[in-house]
Image 1 (cartoon, rainbow, N blue to C red):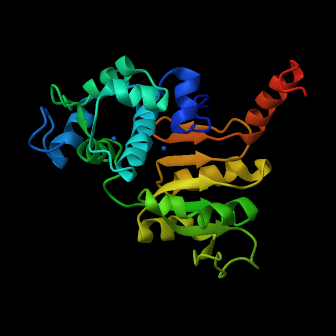
Image 2 (image 1 turned 90 degrees about the horizontal axis):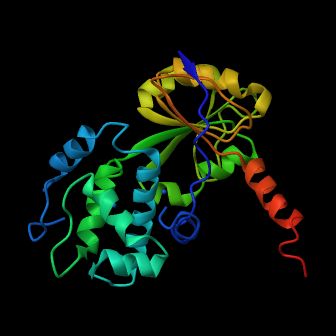
Image 3 (image 1 turned 180 degrees about the horizontal axis):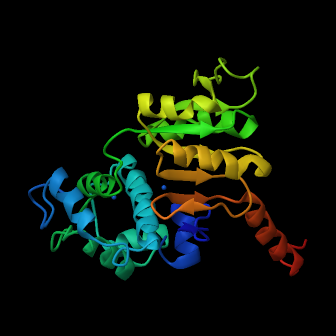
Length: 260
């Protein structure tokens, strides 16, 4: 079976998600935890079915993680769900509900230990290990994504770029990411351990390139090309359509908002 995902849009920042949805890019021996170590935390996450833990929930976990990064940078050691919600325009009850899917992370009278909760959210989201990523398309967008330093900081290593233009093959991005022939994708993906692919090619070529990615055995795909892409049921596709976002802003202005 093939499906055409319609969920998959740009992930908002911590504060933006709080304003738009009131909540939504994650514990030591002193905590009351069901998952008290890395293996147990991951196992607990694995026991949750897709029906039990929605994609909206995992999106919110990413937002909580960003908030915890901010708190840790500011030297905050503990925080309650209420204080977390107030500071980042989130919903305290939603935070507690989301975290309850994966364990009991709080200490009565203390709240959450920021560093420990951050570490365990990273485990739940699979960010406690390096994930190797390949980008399809060595155009302006593909090259910009390849050299974006934020990916590496969050555990995503851009291992390769792929393109069909011969003059680009054998070159590198400014940051040193090598550009390979798209027809070598399957071989290189296996050799480099590529787990995620990013589609950054023109719309006319997107489905064909997506088919090559699927044939290479890559199961997680981020698509920047417009249109509805078709993938097998065992492949996760998320699409980011910048035009849709711009049209939403255009609608806002068309209603007379933002007029001087």
